[in-house]
Structures are given as C-alpha cells and as structure tokens.
Amino acid sequence: MPDNTIRALEKMLDVASFRQKLLASNIANADTPGYKAKDISFQKELSEAIEGTEGNGKGEQTYQVYETVTTMLNRDGNTVNLDIEMAKVAENTLIYNAATQLMAMKMRMVKDVIKGGR
Image 1 (cartoon, rainbow, N blue to C red):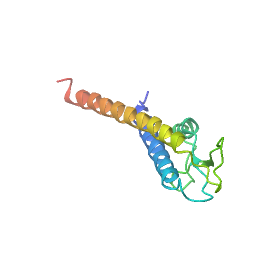
Image 2 (image 1 turned 180 degrees about the vertical axis):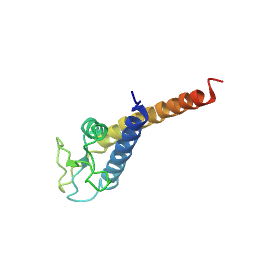
Image 3 (image 1 turned 45 degrees about the vertical axis):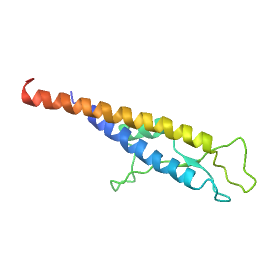
Image 4 (image 1 turned 120 degrees about the vertical axis):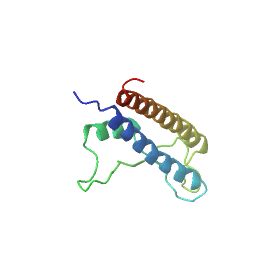
C-alpha cells in the first residue's frame, strides 16, 4: 500500500503558496479604485489536488479563484478589507508552516528507514 503523505503535503504547500500570492495581491491593491479582492477555497482546492482532478491536462495547476464577499464596499468600489486580508494571511502562514514541518518530519523518517534506523 503506497504512502501518499508526501504527495498530499506537496499539494498542500502548492495550494497555500498560490493562496499567499492572491492575498498579497489583495493587500497590494488595497488602495486601487474598483479592485475586487480574490481568494480560493483552500479546503476545496486541496481536496481536488489530492484526488487528482486539478490541472488543465497539460500538467499545469489551475485553481478556481473567486471574488470575496465583503460586508462593506469602499466608496471607490474596492472590496479589500485589510483586517480580513491580514487574518487570512496569518491563517495561511500557519497552514504553510505546519505543512513544511510535517514534510521535514516525513523526510527524516524516510532517511532513518534508508539508514536502517541508525
């Protein structure tokens, strides 16, 4: 029975990395009139990536990006709320850090097996 842990962690890192880019773009455009904040569903994208339904058939990763719904629209039509975006960045950073730590542990375990437990 193959161990898909490394593949799942790799996909987790890919999705978190892409989401971080989206969130950084939202923050960078906080003062851009008419800019619509964007995000992805981390759980949905990770599930699809692990199930192998991601991509466009050419080996390229694609994600379903959507405009986030905000409670208050700025006067200039911008939907970025810096407090919400910063909270999302913090959450995403925790996910990414957890995945890197799990990947490091898994690699140490594989290394120990290869060395024969020494």
